[in-house]
Length: 150
Image (tube, rainbow, N blue to C red):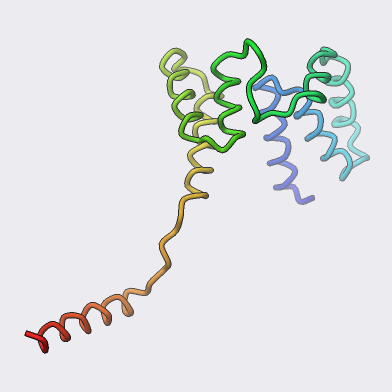
């Protein structure tokens, strides 16, 4: 794992912690630890997270599959995450925008909106790349053909 990859993986773990997804953060950090088993500080952090995590957080992560539906009684954040996991990005974006109206300083909501917009952009169909010369040649051929037919 390169230093950049490790930094990105640690950022994903931190974001998961801020979202309250302790089990996901632990899994991410353990994946980093598997690659660098000699990192004592990281091992201590994973152990500390495991000790401080409430059992229901780890149980819920083991028994609940995100994306099908939010947990019963879940708030708008969980509903937005469930929509995003289903691939319903429009609903997830709308829910996060509504959350930002009520909590305009929520950095986590802004980060998640940026992630969702990147996902939407990545899935958007792309037009085939056409060189300018080829497009101009095709246009000139069409104009010439019309002039001959007139």
